[in-house]
Length: 548
Image 1 (cartoon, rainbow, N blue to C red):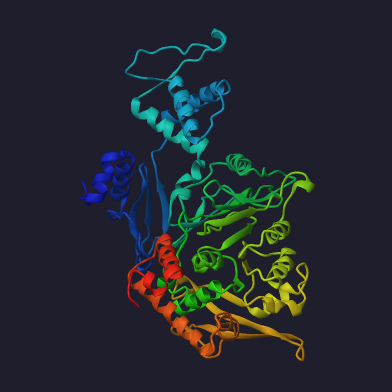
Image 2: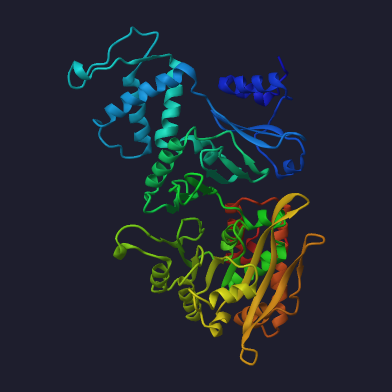
């Protein structure tokens, strides 16, 4: 018998299925996996990985690769095999029959309790005398209870909850905090994007196209946006906040129904964590801090999966703690730390007159005079309302698909947004982020930050100024705006009433030091970062928990 570490041995005591899996894995050909309670980013540098980590009993994950074997993700959970799988089908058949006579549940907890009772009513443990279930309406409807062991009935309840109440085969993936994205194209194995180990296949799959078809339809009904041949593409939000996109019809998705889930983090990633990862520099973050503190409008731009939404969420604590914030989103993603927060969401189903798009949400938000308006993503005509909001003095934050300021201006001044080019300078800052591969690793970096200076009538175009630029040669962020920043000197310094506009760079340096000190002290939790920033906003440097 191989020698296992303490972590594995402890987990084995509570989870026989984990012991069976590891014993089989080691016996076949491989080294003993390491057991890790938490993963670190440094693990991405390891050429050959063989790690098991827990998601909470009875779920575990095994990440494995060697120089010759590609990396893979194996979800380990109690299996339903052989005779028990047949029994499970019989038990579920009885449960569904009886459920129609039960009163509707009020919440998830009551749902689980009702389901557990129905399973108990449909089974008999083998150490009890075998009994026949009494018929609800006479003997013609009677059906024998299914004989099970005490261990089997717990396993049946676990899988029943997974399949009926939770998300079925995807539940282990949704529960894994290290997963960013989940993809399924046809009934092949589901693949993921891992926060540390990047893209890889999993052992989770749908056994047939029919099973996948039923699953996708059930998933769309669960989010309140049923997919059909008439409505094959559906976007929505799962119960945990994860963003999902479904494509149902096989003439649209040629390989069969498919879906993509962008995982929701229970706690947003903090700005100090992004600094630690070098996604953004402390000085760039300090610049955004000053911009948001003084009501500048900022658009976070980049391609898909560049991290722009994550960065926008990370900088929200820079907005003054007592501000009134409105968010308008197609799919709920943003988490705003402010007490006065009005969360608005679109409704794209039902009769035409009852639908609400982002355009309507922004118009409604303007009537409430918020201090900040946050738009999840600008795609169409709502962009013109966003610029109208800026013109009336409402700072706006949003994400936008564009790789440069020139492309951003082209898209905003063309169909379907059609913002007059003379209005573009109502936007103060364009922030650009990208996902890049560097030495085989996928990284997210702030590529540049541009200031929108104004419309030049003589040239017939918008003047911009680059204040930060990423240097690919040494992976550093270069500040080009020292004593040369239009937004800092002509906007923020003026609002602060500085006689000497260059004093604003002292404010920038102070905030840079605060962020650097937070990173040095490993203050990475979003709530902890927010607490430090809020106390600084209230009391200045006297409110900081450390000297600067």
